[in-house]
Length: 401
Image 1 (cartoon, one colour):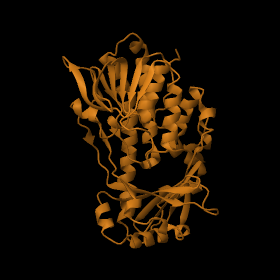
Image 2 (cartoon, one colour):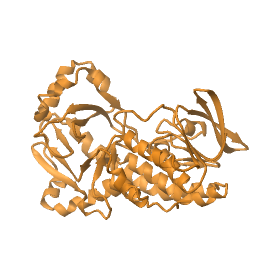
Image 3 (spheres, helix red, strand yellow):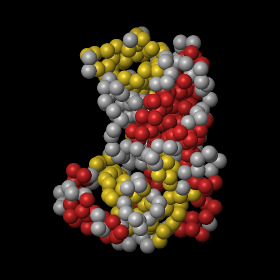
Image 4 (cartoon, one colour):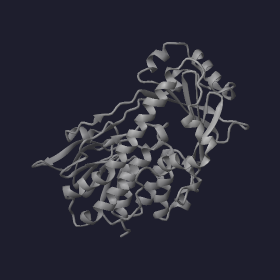
C-alpha cells in the first residue's frame, strides 16, 4: 500500500493526528493493533485544552452529548482536612471543566468524524512490526493483519504507539528514564446517593487514594511504592480492603466488591523522554516520545497537543508530498519545552509529596503549601492552568480541505 502519512497507534494522539491530516486533505492511514478501543482503566479525562480543540473544530457541542461527568473543581482530603486545590472556573477556555469519559467513546467519536473524509483510512487488527528503510530514511512500515503481512509505504511515518513503542525501538531510539517512585492500582467501586459530589483524593497513614466520579461507580487509583504490588498481593486481600475502609470510611460497605486481586489492575508508572523525537521520514509523538506520570491526569491531553502541533506544522508540506526533517525537528522544538516543564513538576510532586506520604506510618497533616489554597482561593487558578491547559495549549490551525 502507498499513502502520504502512516500513523502507527490508534490512541488519542494517533487518532487526533489522523483526523486532522485527513481533514486537511492529506491521505492518511491509522493502524490500530486491536479489534476495538474497549480497554478499561485508560486515561479517561478530557481536559479543557482538548475540549478547546474540539470547539476549534466545531465539534464540542456534539461531543458533550456523549455520556460524561464534569469535574469543575478538584479537592484533596489530607488527614482530616479538606482542601480544594484546583478551580477551573476562571480558565480562558470554552469548557471550564474536565470531562470524564471512557476513552473508547472519545476514540470512536474521532474515528467517526475522520471517516467522513475520503483521505482517511483506519485499519484495525493491524500491528506494525517494523520500519521500511531506504538509505537511512524511513519509507513506511511492515505490519501483520488478519489477512497476512502487509507493507505500507509512506512519505511520513508517525509513531504514536505508546510508551512501549515498537516503532521507536525499530528506529533505534532509547528514552531517558527520568524516574517514578510509585505505581498505581486501578479498580472500581459502586457509587451511591450521598457520596461526595466531586472527584477527590485522600491521603493519610501512608496511603493515597484518588476517586474519580464515573456516574454509577468510582474509578479508584491507589498509589503504592514502585514495585510494591507483589508484596501487597502476598497478604490476604481482606487486610487491604480493611485499610481502604479506614482510609475512606464511606466506602466501607462496598470494599467487598473487590473480590480478589484479579479485580485490581496495575499501572506501572513510567516517566521518560526521548532526546530526539525524529529521524528522516519518522516522527514520535505522545507516549512514544515522552511517558508522563499520572499526576494531574494530563498525559492524554499532552499527547493530543503533540498531535495538534504536528498537524499545524506539517500539513502544508504533506500536501506537497514532502516531510522535511527540519519540520519534524520543529514539532519537537515546539512541544519539548512544555513536556519538560510538565515532567519536572510531576517529578517534584512525586518526590516531595507522594513519597513522603507513602513513608508515613501515622496521621498526616497537610503542609502549609496546601492549606494556603483554603485561605487564598484565588491561588486555585494556578494549578488549574497547569492541569487544565498545560504549559502550552495548542490551537487547531490546520485547515479543512
